[in-house]
Length: 260
Image 1 (tube, rainbow, N blue to C red):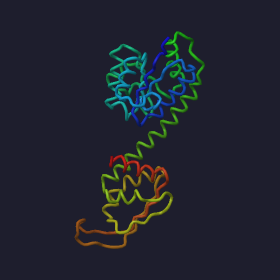
Image 2 (tube, rainbow, N blue to C red):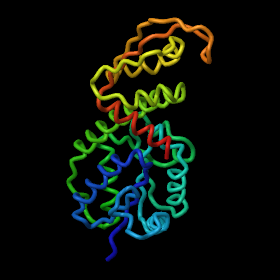
Image 3 (cartoon, rainbow, N blue to C red):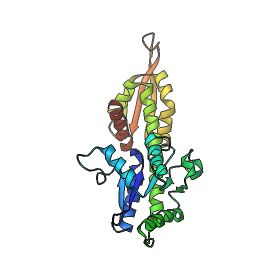
Image 4 (cartoon, rainbow, N blue to C red):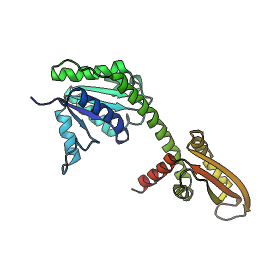
């Protein structure tokens, strides 16, 4: 008897949500269910074309669990994989997280019966559905613990997305300043000399947002006046910054993404 295959559809940034489900499904059903997760090396075979593996899994799966957030529902792959399940007339279950609810889903995903990932009672329905594919009774699953994991992941994910947005804003404002900040050591005050006051004013909103989140402290002391020049003159000063470790790592991550 072939194992039922469950396809976990997610964007790369939300792999942790899929991994939490994958672990629970595999342990609850004692390996009797084949779970395909595109971000997992266990699902993608060495030496194979990854797109062929995904196509084959979409063709063979008995159900698709799709992870939906404000950041994923507009992505092409999510809609493509949902469409593949729709065309085959198999169950496609949207699991909403990170601020998205079933009522927030766009057409045509909102025509599917979605659930909220941090609702323990609704999570049980997924395991009941998988059990029906096996023709077996639903296993005893600690859905409250799984719901707690999804809630915790959602809080951390939303914060990272928002912080990343502010970091990218700083890069778009001034690449030179962004690159200097990228060299900042964690939890040490770095003094950057000769920074135009006008530039600091342009950076104020992302600086304030990061400071409010406890990721950064900044200050600016004016100490000179420039006349003319490329910046058109104005006040110059020393910009003092102190970043925590997670923000330092995020600056470097954004820099690497942009250079790739």
